[in-house]
Length: 127
Image (cartoon, rainbow, N blue to C red; front, top):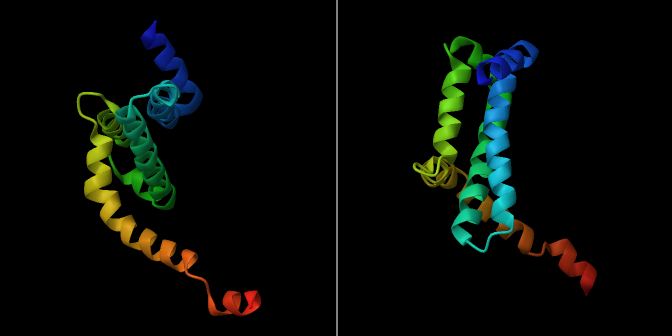
């Protein structure tokens, strides 16, 4: 039954559809469960997963032409995303702390400072 469903999905949307389903359905289900959970570790795991998922999706859409040159790209992508969300590995936390956080946080801190600091024109208008 699983092989038939996989074959039908592959015929309908190819490897991209199967990859999108694998990378979305289980994490979305677990995220809904985590919302009602009082366990902060669940919240952190799934919020981190979605940050990594978003970062990867944006990167993939910008550099999508490169995926055509990677053999078995969709199989590798499925393996990578299962590693990200599998409870045994929790790879999303590692990717976030080692890859995304060092890149994004300096820019986020600078943006936060510039937004929270009143500009000279705003200060003059309030006087």
